[in-house]
Image (tube, rainbow over all chains, first blue to last red; front, top):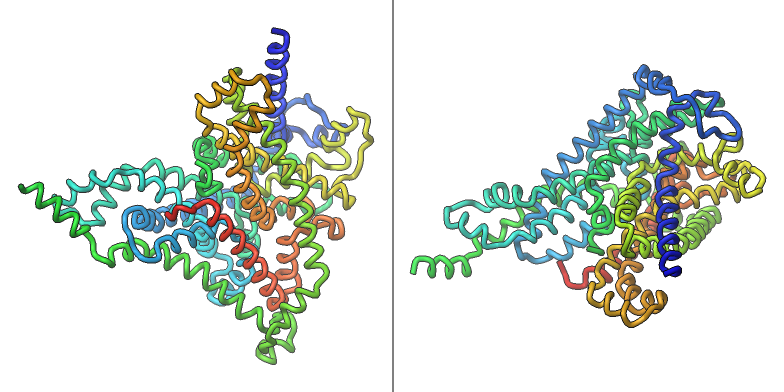
Length: 274
Length: 307
């Protein structure tokens, strides 16, 4: 009895420590965003303080940050829509048809998960410069497809494969074309997978920094992570505003991520673990 | 009769022509090809030329073909290899710690009892994973600040005097390690947890009746189910460490000196500060080759029964 009591306590304390460590840095950022500058610069740091909304007021008065968040929103939603539109038909083909080179194609999609953006950053920069796409959202939207399309194709193929083939027999007898079958049977039945993959695509594009840094130099077009990092120069850093910006950037992604938390690992490992 | 012929017909005639898959695939494949392959070919071509866009002589010569010169200069470049070695060192420190924590946390999350706390903890693991990498860097700058960082406060509680983390080479390296462990241990944990949940309940219960030893349980029942996850972790983490840019860029920009100059930070600097495209492309191609080997390995190990 004593042993099991001890084990229970160890289990309880262990989980509690994990919970605190997982949440602490995030909560510390959120707390700091409500601190006055004097509280922020207090040494040692203060844990109890009078919260203030001043940082957020300053942030929303700053056109630069509002624009940056809107830019991120435009880029991330466009690339998400585009990768769903282009990716779901491909997933349908991979799930439904047999053809030569299918597995090679499938592996090619998966390989894109591994490629470091830095490998393509420089050539993409040069090419974008040559064709006049530097400083345009379109460049970001297109380049983000290189990691979003594979994730959409992967998750949706998996989803579509689970749809029983005999459902479409009836439709075929009614003379439905293959495209009808895709649009009216597979897409509605696989909508949950499509939604999960869309959320992943949104999260990845929203969080992206490197291409945003490299391909956009004009202040009006910069995305939110880039603007947040730009604060980090200068002598006296506006910590409160930085942390408020960080909170604003992270909040939507966390909400989305909690929605797909059950699929998080499938998405990140491309299904190596179920 | 009618159904018979219909069934027979649908067996012979799959309802689509040989070209149907092509129409569905073409948009995605062509797009990925145009955006992904074209820059790669461009980099490959550039890597064989003397191509520094800030050097006028190169421009006047029309960016001459120089064979493997760029590759030779990368191979001889000590900074490239030292940042490569640093990336390896980072991986070798970070990943074993994440695996150790990951196994422990996964076992705690898998153990029966305390179901509410277990659920809350499991869900909370999503937060580090989803936090924008650049913002993780911002948080790191705040936590490891010399004057008002909370890291120094924690250490003062256990009697260690404060230090300027990001201002000295060892401190900065430790700081990025801590932030990476915070962000990615949840990933490792959840992969192991997925493996653990594959252990059939009957086997686990039978084993519980057989033995009281947690170690035997772990070694003979649970560990075999976690092994495939381990391989996935080792490969994916190495790809991700090679990719690691945002958090380190925000926290240290590779400094102080070259203390946190991981490979992607280094390649970015050569490309965008020095603008020697020839050399930077050669570096990119070398990185790409490593990545391709990694992903081949991953595919070979995990998708044996072809899609």
